[in-house]
Image 1 (cartoon, helix red, strand yellow):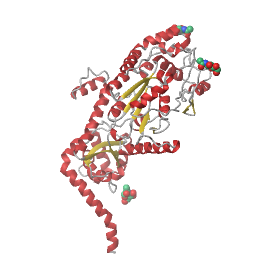
Image 2 (cartoon, protein in one colour; image 1 turned 120 degrees about the vertical axis):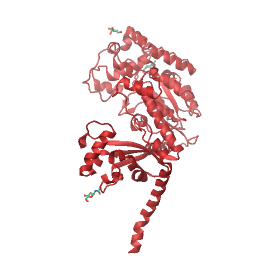
Image 3 (cartoon, helix red, strand yellow; image 1 turned 90 degrees about the vertical axis):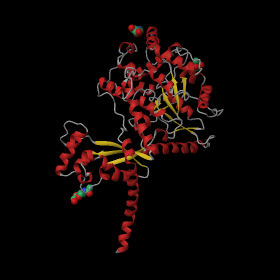
Image 4 (cartoon, protein in one colour; image 1 turned 180 degrees about the vertical axis):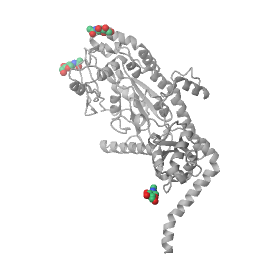
Length: 491
Ligand SMILES: *[C@@H]1O[C@H](CO)[C@@H](O)[C@H](O)[C@H]1NC(C)=O
Ligand SMILES: *[C@@H]1O[C@H](CO)[C@@H](O)[C@H](O)[C@H]1NC(C)=O
Ligand SMILES: *[C@@H]1O[C@H](CO)[C@@H](O)[C@H](O)[C@H]1NC(C)=O
């Protein structure tokens, strides 16, 4: 009888001791830990507030709002810097930083009788939400970030430290509101880490439609390079897109996937890397215009960036062909051109590319490159490599060798055969048969050409960026190297 009692108690007793260490350390450093807590860990877009709001907010934080061309970018930078500061401050205190998510509706369901209405009232006044009167109008969850002593694990943080942050809306004795449930039943949490916890060496960040697939697939042939998968990496565009700091689970998962990709590559090729460990790359051609993605990449000090540029007129034509050009047989065209599979033929389309000029509106800003390239060049100076698509076509071997040289690797093996993917040669639309349209477009895209010339000059390259594909269209055979079943085909 006595023995059984002891056995039952052994684990809880250890638990209590560990809880005590966590609590004691927390109490000792409480002021410091609390001062760092409660920073936002998710990016929220700026668009739901008027301009004057941001102007005031930025001014109040000492940022000259008139010099900031776009509040959005300044807002992203501000949120990001505060999150970085918080986690740095927390680790200086010898702590770990946690992202804790409270399921408000579950909490509401658990709360008994009168506790329900006082919960709702307190939430309304704490968060200045005007009219919360029923379960369905409660926000689904509430995130709080908390800095705790490093010895505390997730379970201890939620049971012993978290409750004190809830007094403002759960009253002086928060546990009472939960009845026989505990905070473990309504709170989910994960530690957050810094962006440099990702084990990654370089990234192809753009420009979309400029040969990024060829870049990735050819670089992958190098024995000392590994990509996580044979597709675009969604870490910064989807998985952790809104996060200001990544969770430990995200970091662990991605690092494990990269590790598995390395192992798979050596198994497949039978070659040991000549350099250990090999370099890990990620590719996502749509990262270059994202201010938040740039902040995250800047926070990974060893990450190098690769950007491939291409003729702006050709890129416009390709995007227009994919999204807005009328094809007599859309399905056949999609097969040939790997056009957006989500286009079903019911959307507005244009019979002539002259619509690029006549129907501009939002389309243009959406696909502009120059301002983003300028920011990248400045921000990643010394660890960014710009090249032009023409170099991939005209001198692949020396281009790829200098690229891996930039990454710190020896040249490609002698027998490497560099190919082109997703390429559509020859006439793709009516653009090249209309010389005045081509020159009108070139004029409208003048700022893009100027930016590309500046960048390539800095990188010591002599590429004639002002030749468009229409200049040599009749001199080469038409080629189609489309996407088949989502897989790019080479030629
Ligand atoms: C709390 O107790 C009630 C009845 O005493 C039970 O129905 C319910 O499942 C319990 N809840 C939890 C979360 O244990
Ligand atoms: C050529 O493009 C211009 C726009 O720059 C347009 O006005 C004209 O109609 C086009 N010509 C043909 C033959 O499509
Ligand atoms: C185009 O293709 C034909 C036949 O396939 C070939 O004879 C010719 O040399 C090619 N021309 C160029 C410029 O590649």
